[in-house]
Image 1: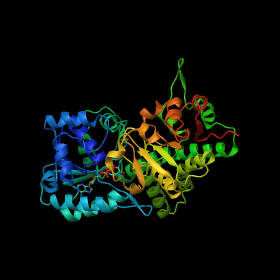
Image 2: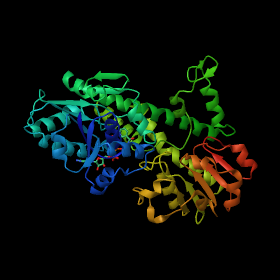
Image 3: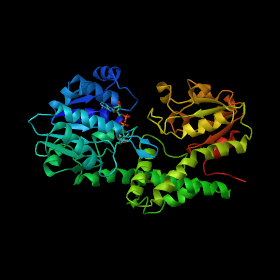
Image 4: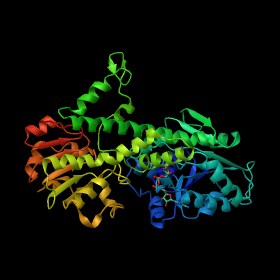
Length: 452
Ligand code: NAD
């Protein structure tokens, strides 16, 4: 099939490359000429493990190309996928990019005779596809549902494992305006053996929010328990979670082997969720629920706990180092999670802001995210970037570890003690052995752990 993907961000490019790997001819449409040229030279414009190799293969086979010419690209496509950003502004979803993209697609499709299907892959609140996207498409294309189909198929890929998620999806949810739309879109995935769920448009839209809000809620729940542990004292929240996780309903024994499903990793204390999805999607869902006259206590609390959680790290730091003015504080990790360079809504942002406000000299390291400087929302002119974790730690009065990058897990207690002026370590991800670090002479502070 010929497929056009509007948007060359994390979702657009990974989706395009995985569809090309399935044997389709794909064009990814973007606005940034440099990015388009990079993609056409098989260079990934952002860091995503495995994407380089996939891109090299599909570009070499001429299965994937990029273009800024939206009109020509969509005219010959059987399927047109919308994968543009849908950020949250003032806590509500901002549809301006997807409305504009839909208008452009609609205008380009005027008078085309062949049956084509437009697929919304961007995350949008229920009813958007039927009451915003379809009216724009119908108005600008002057086409009716018998020649122009419409689907809403939410994307579940996770940055850091996006290539595996997109090439081997757990399921494909296909919201369809009518059966023909869904059937045509499903053909693109006919060789992918995975459950395909055919539903109406608004069910598909809500499925995405329900999934993201579930994981965000588990994280906030775990963080609330961690705050209770800290305030109580003499409780290590890791011991609490060990006791909870061994419940056979969470980690069943299959034969003699205990299985740990992925969901268990969300029931774990840390410094809060971030990224381009959970924060904006929970806010958009809350706003949408209110518009439906549902007082969503769960989602509201999830958001509130997450807003406070990163700052508990600063509180832990101040217990060991009450006066932060003039102190050199190393912040390890600014990406919202490891294996991505994405810093959107990272817990590092409120932490660094609070440190700067308290007069600390902040030295930041991240193996990937620093390449994207200047980083939006970061007070870039007020912080220093170190080229390695060792450089960041050298002479530091304290360190806060925010992102669980593998390379940080290998920093030993001896290294902290050797490099730092004062070996105070605040572990925002509970990735170190607290006893081993303490034995090495580190003043160890971990989320959910306060010994009296
Ligand atoms: P992104 O910001 O990385 O990329 C969006 C791209 O769309 C940008 O490159 C932008 O320039 C481009 N764009 C906007 N309007 C355009 C137009 N008219 N023509 C051509 N290009 C245009 O966003 P993303 O992270 O890829 O997310 C896209 C959507 O997918 C969002 O709705 C998001 O919620 C959803 N989603 C994201 C993830 C994720 O992990 N990033 C996962 C699942 C779903």
